[in-house]
Length: 373
Image 1 (spheres, rainbow, N blue to C red):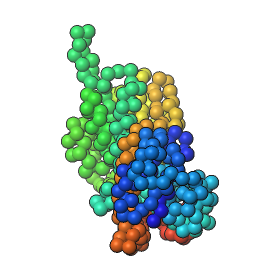
Image 2 (image 1 turned 45 degrees about the vertical axis):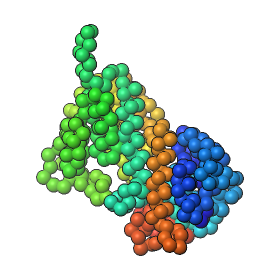
Image 3 (image 1 turned 90 degrees about the vertical axis):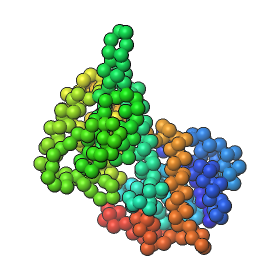
Image 4 (image 1 turned 180 degrees about the vertical axis):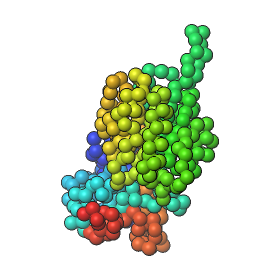
């Protein structure tokens, strides 16, 4: 089984889908890796590292003949047009948003896994790329946010006077949010967290943060698969009032409400931003899908009346070594899950395989993608 690894060509992307350690591990099971020259350079994995692990550094024409091609980001149209028929492509496809790419793959009669569609189950945890990368994003959002701030994060007692701790509000207590809470607490900030799912209160408080609650008698916000869901209008009205109050006194706000294939919900209005103190920071981790703040501009830092909204769309790429290591380990687990006595096999009855497989030899198998087409 030949596995091809392409160099990422998205602007600013420093990650690589497979690292040498995974090459060494899966080579023992009969997988042969073909790596584009320089694919791991931005993550500090050299071509020599790959060759020592058993991979072959080769030209693109050889890689495109692989049985499996792995990328971090969705391929470009040019890349798709060179992929061989029946190849399995594995990447972070947003299938409903990347419709033209899906059409091109369909015409090539390829198969494809979207890592965004991996079921959120206990068995799939070690394959969960969204969680491993969100963990990094939550950590780095606090570090970058602290760097933007013109204040200390911790409480300090000095001869020149007492410095109050920075007030940090985390919106969304999923993987990214919980890591952000833990990191902000380690830096000494005063941390509050909000989430529409009341069951995460215990996790938030176990990390030393205060949980901001919106009273509700229903299951508002409690979705399936570990995600939050759309809330009622009554709940949203209560939420808006509490958010206004908490955001207005916060020095650093980190938003994490992001669901693949959907526009990010707008949680912070312009009015809320203008209530913040000059020099305050908003780190919008949902900027890739439009942002949780009305003023977010994806990929840019917006200065709105001395309130700064950071719309970085790829925080994991700012820590490429560990981000690539975790991404690669997730891919290794996926391949291992599909590996049986006779080698690699797509068991369509398996919920993890069927969940990720949105294209099977040119046939769309994911209903929402089919409807979008």
